[in-house]
Image 1 (cartoon, rainbow, N blue to C red):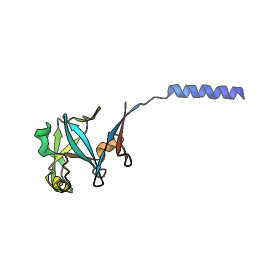
Image 2 (image 1 turned 135 degrees about the vertical axis):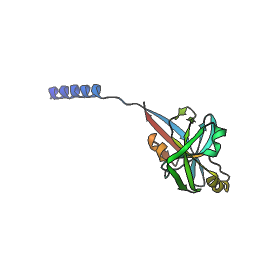
Image 3 (image 1 turned 30 degrees about the vertical axis):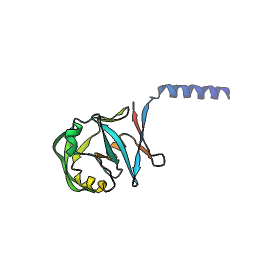
Image 4 (image 1 turned 180 degrees about the vertical axis):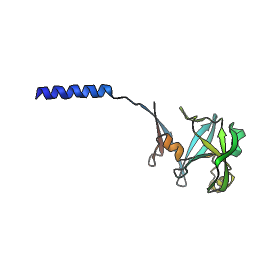
Amino acid sequence: MQKGVIIGIAFYMILATSCKTVEFSESEMILNKRNNMLFITLQINNKKGLFLLDTGAGISLIDYNQAKRYGFNIGSVANSGTITGVGGNNRLFTVYNIDVMYEHFERSSVKFYGSDFSGINDVFDQNSIRILGILGSDFLSANQATINYKTKKLMLSRRE
């Protein structure tokens, strides 16, 4: 019996020391709920902007009309060309020179596409809401996001 316990402990120690440790860093973001929609305030190139959290959007978008104010650049028409949504049909453009931060959590690798948000903001204006962009499932998935609707918090994890 003792021999079996000793072998089991030795096996566990070998297994434990041979496993690679992966550490995760987590950030908790506070969400704002208005009209049953979740919003988050992010810093884009050190200026605050309101983003709609949209789990049904496949990509993240930013209003290209705000490029000068927020200091990002608009490139050529994106491969997919157009997008259809609340604001109607809009062309998509590549966006670059954009740094995204939430307090201490930086995500400069977030890929945004530029689109005209005039139609979207016309809809939101009825409720005194103006958004700079939409955080889509591409961002949520890449950051292993968990949304807690009860506490209105967004948890993001990433491997270190």
